[in-house]
Length: 191
Ligand SMILES: C[S@@+](CC[C@H](N)C(=O)[O-])C[C@H]1O[C@@H](n2cnc3c(N)ncnc32)[C@H](O)[C@@H]1O
Image (tube, rainbow, N blue to C red; front, side, top):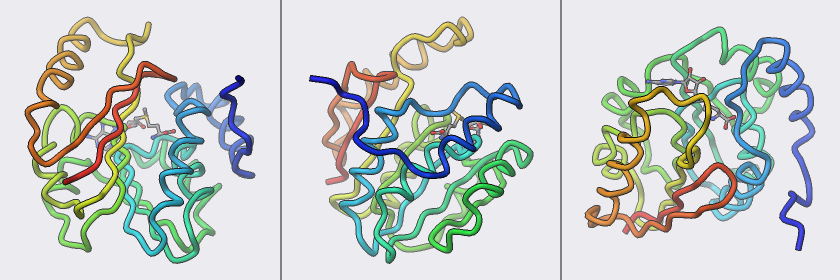
């Protein structure tokens, strides 16, 4: 069995070409992207959030799966990086890009309950997890990637990941499954 994605978003090649030119090497793996598209498709009319836009590869996959009635907010601390995503995906009326720290965004959020959260930066994962879960609808999907060791990690990162994984079973409002697949995922459901 080959686990390569069956289909790819149209915008992805252009995004990845711009990422290569800019030296941005943190876009999600394609297998992860395909899973994101599948999970996004379970939330027609839903409120989806990505923390850490990067150059928009993850957002492209989420949009690939989303129904016309679903909405995505993608949050990124670095406006220059996010501008690549805006260029490639900004025409899609289902997505809104916000350039600010996810810490600030999580603390300030007053919108509808979140139906899917793809967390690709520290807030919402290593800290402010309780805050994010409090903003999510029951049945909401929680996805984290990049949990298997990577060459680019600073020395102090593995203990951070270990602590996150150790704390997850204690999270009473999340049924999570760790997956040694792609870059190392946790997929959970808010209960
Ligand atoms: C792994 S990359 C995101 C990749 C993207 N989600 C994808 O799937 O292609 C992580 C991004 O998070 C951003 N970031 C780091 N800390 C952040 C924070 N506190 N708030 C928002 N974004 C942050 C980084 O600038 C970087 O672009």
